[in-house]
Length: 394
Image (cartoon, rainbow, N blue to C red; front, side, top):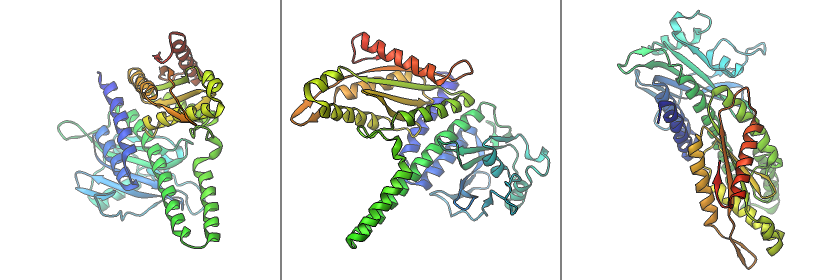
């Protein structure tokens, strides 16, 4: 396995690890520590965009200064927040972190002290305050699936094997940007879970009071769920995302992968002989099978960046960013085997189904579009069906 494949495999492993973090503080600390390892950085900071339009320090790790603040292993951050807008309402472009968030672009300085004063004035002021010497300097915006800025990742002072301060490697930048994409998705997912848990606790408290208050709380919770989950993109039968959501996310993921040059794998799945299930047991039993297959898939797709959706009828589709073709094929076989081993109960009937899965993988470029990848996965799926069903083909 070459270094590039090992790097993307590490990103996959990091994605799984991020999804396992149980609170925002530990998640942010994990993100920054993994970024420092990937970039071989001596120090780093992670900023979060606040509701009052500022960037606040969430965590700072500095090996040379033995400084660990924020997260779960350090004292709370005491550094001042960075305003995203100036008093006249214009964007704050003077600070590197705020400028990166506004532009939505990675900003890199090989040596801060060989850069003009205005661009890194605040960085130098910070160095003067802490006694640190920033040299190589990498700033990456964190953006959610809607390409909205939610924070900034900064890494300082890359080190070589001898511990000398050097420039960041060119290979480090796309890897760090890929990690930032995974981190942003994990942060948004964690935020939604935390908000839902808070709403749940509030509801449980209000249930102990009178019925009218309970009805008001249920109404507020329902409204919050509409905002958080965007129910127009949820398939009513399976509980998965629907085709509309898939189309939007697929285009966003495709553009991101084209910029950062990482692979995108697609799994197209079809339930075998599904018409006979409906004809034999009825359409309600068919819905039970659809929901059961969806549940099996949801239990297997654990990475925050993965998206599973109902494509239409008895077809499902899954986006697997950063996954090599061999890994995607092996994963598809695990999905197929898990569904084959499952049984679904509809009324008094126990129904077993199998699936045919097509796998396609592509690194996006100017010559192809997301439709080409979908067409390849679709063709692979029909190959699986035409060669015997209950199998994976590519």
